[in-house]
Length: 417
Image (tube, rainbow, N blue to C red):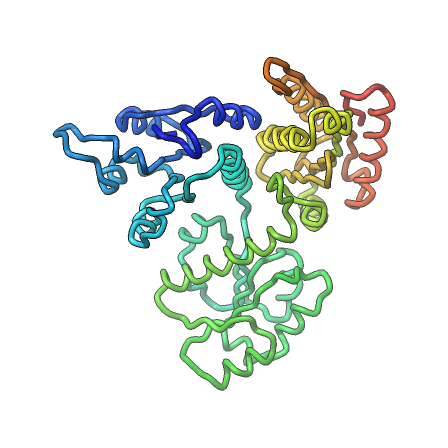
């Protein structure tokens, strides 16, 4: 945090109190050299917030006032930055453009309440922890996209050359976008209808036709046949960036449907769709899975005693702790209220028990300040079920939920497998 003056009032203690609720450690800097040194040594998970008002109070070595261009030159290039600015500054488009062109993760206008700022930072932090790979299915002879650029945006390109089996590959891959070369459409003009009328296909799926040369008549037929967009084969970099933008919009729309607003985790709908796909993959790869259901103990008492706002803080702290323990192919969701569900990839029943019990102990060690000078620690209980002993997502959930009930009945603060 690079700041001298804060948001509604000059009040570090209030900001630190809000941050403490989410277990954030905020460090303050009022010297550019110190901030740059700290940012240079920091890891990728840290957030870097710059209050632009600080520039008016800073000078360079030759006593020249520091300008924004000076600041941007000095910030380490391996990070992106969150900027705070006044409403007057936000009205200057050239300023916004300069920020965006220089590794701006987000910006916000002041005044902004300390608790609101910390909530926004939490959302950014949670989102960066949950980057997911999206798949693009390409029906054509030779993909004309920059694979490195796609990889940098967590997009996997799956090449396919058989129109007759494309619908099966789509079901298997759960791709977000299908790109089809125009000549394949000419061979089988009902291809889009075959893809979209499968009830198991994600309704957010977009199907794009790639044209070698502009052909308005063909484009019209393609749109009438169900294509969502026509893209022209052009410069590889431009075409790739168009695809990246489309995938980005699809991710936003899917997040609105499948993500929990408060924590950024998968919600019940999102988890069920992803879990079914993971179970199918586990069957192909012959690896075990474990499904866990956990529930914060006596959560109603927490809400009744300290209020729903504090209860939300407990939920968010737990979501951060759990997400930090997830591996690349694990799934974590908030099903609603104080209940979380996770699917652990390539995990035996014994390994799942040990991992979940470690999470339970970690949450039990978190200290919450419920009132000034008063601290409390809380717990959760959990139940486990294993694949392939149980074969479907619904049956796995029901058994794990039963085990959770057993854990509650046995005294809470424990895991039952």
